[in-house]
Image (cartoon, rainbow, N blue to C red; front, side, top):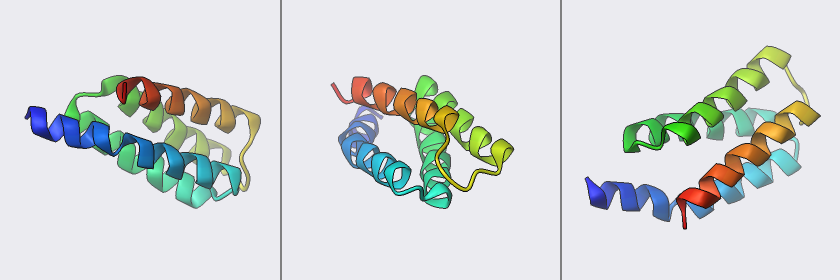
Length: 89
């Protein structure tokens, strides 16, 4: 299991880049997709705070029916990136 967890951690930087790119380009559909995927992966590997924050981002996007990154979505993105960065250290 430790090898699988390390695999997840090794991919965190790539996931952070994807989150940043989709957010900065207002790719709401892409941002929702990456949040959904990260929520599932983080749950499977035992990173519950990342999973919860990714899930909250996904719900926020769904609730606001956003067409662009709003301040609330950006705050959630920033929180998710921060958690991912802490996990990769």
